Length: 215
Image (cartoon, rainbow, N blue to C red; front, top):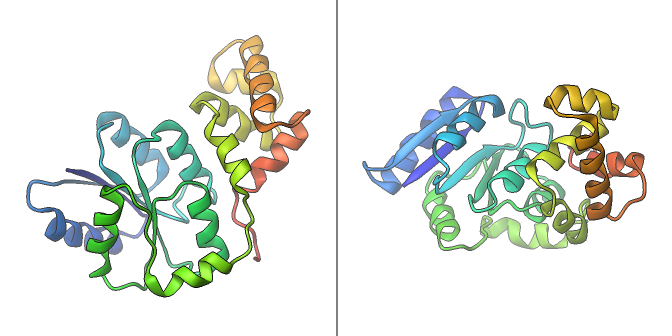
């Protein structure tokens, strides 16, 4: 059993790691990352990871872009979001974008076993007291958009992020060390998969992945 714990707070990582060790047993391999830059090499080294704990406000994640990038690159690895954020709208957004579970940091560690068991069985999970509020919360991300995002390749997702950041094709080509014609092909595919007719609209859609200031 391999689990990755991605959180920028050392004390929380240690507490979560100890709790997971008690649940999964001594043979479990528990790896830690304090930002997205550390998480990617760990995943490349351990593509058979069973699940990931991901802090919502992880450095380098920029809202839900980290979750979406993980779902694009490693669709078979479940992601359990952990956060101090308990707004039902935010939680609903995480689940719509593919999080397998959402655990508030205020939740007792005893709930971890329940969440992990559900996720390993292929189910989604929320604390029981949040289910109704999340179900009734407004949707900032619709399921159609989420499903269209899942169609993007990892390279196309990176191109989309740079489009949203205002980079031109030649700048994106430089950043990715490829020919500009390759980027043009990616952009065409992105527009088709997102069902939009220009890069400005694609960038606007990407902005939905960034956490709103107020919801």
